[in-house]
Length: 270
Image 1: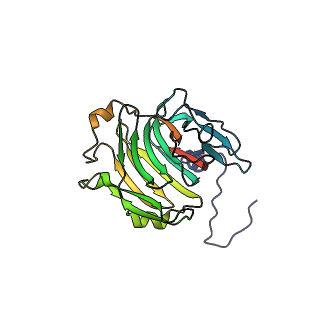
Image 2 (image 1 turned 120 degrees about the vertical axis):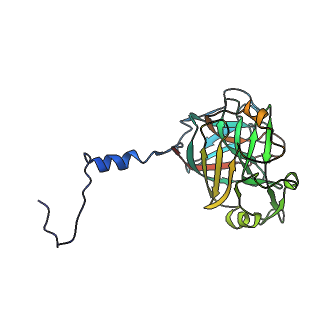
Image 3 (image 1 turned 120 degrees about the horizontal axis):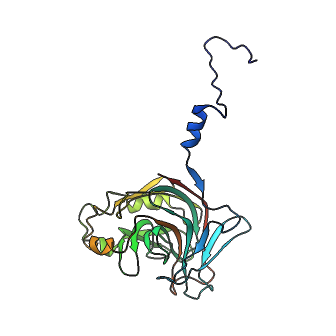
């Protein structure tokens, strides 16, 4: 028997059989893509791609996922892909890149590691948070500004406009932060939380990105006015659904022994 309560106080108990309890459970579709112990649910790309065969991936004793060139400093990279495919979804991921790696978070990615990329280029003339289409047949950057270190070996950064964006008309992005806002939000020597929302049932997605709660951009691939973007060429190489990918970039610019670290990877299907 429940204890007597003063008048005006109501307690609602949600039992396992309660329709309200079941509805609350059904509305929570978020789940983890990384268990903090292994690469279960992930695999390197099954086909060689732009950046190599897959890179070197592992999990530290602290339960953090890492990626680097394979072998370190070789110039050979690739992508780690989720076992599941996604079309419309939200995801959150925490990242801490060393200085020097050229990396990315890929959306709707195929088995060669090709798809829509969120930049994680943590090096001089780099960018984190804006969008690129990257496939072997056709690629286009959508990068309004870049950053570099003010002084070698120290974390403070400066930004400058990307030369390729100087003639952009209005509408390349529906929303984008300023370089100054990005500098205030990004933590170059610490963990950063990136949230991504990918929507759109056709081939051309709407991609929204936040870094540490700053809205970095909203990009509509169907409406972008970037004069260098050829929608007909893009339509031939992009997919309506694909894997989530983490990238180790090919090339000699990646410092030997440098890594990108990832954790707390969660996704919600929409």
